[in-house]
Image 1 (spheres, rainbow, N blue to C red):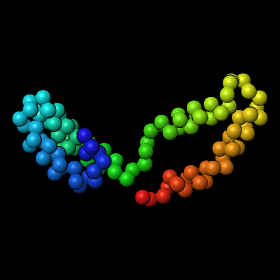
Image 2: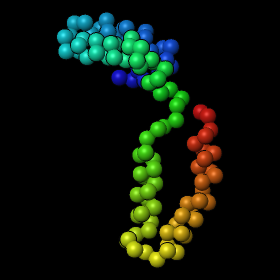
Image 3: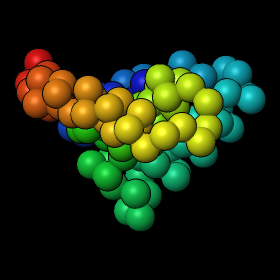
Length: 106
């Protein structure tokens, strides 16, 4: 479902429509009932807490990709100290630009 990508105040109407459309299909209806009781109407998880619209990415995939890329540039293990220092320096020259690009509002 794409409900987490909607603004919190717009989650309920499409969910109600989906729920109405799945009443004819028992397997889907049980899944929709679960989503409703766990995520839509449950006070433990208010919609604002799981709606991800306009929120920053909060995974470590980007960091893992960066680390893998740095390791690939360095080549084999046990390199002289100047090799990773040079690679990290090259990376640092683009950090300001990357921060600016990531922080721009779309």
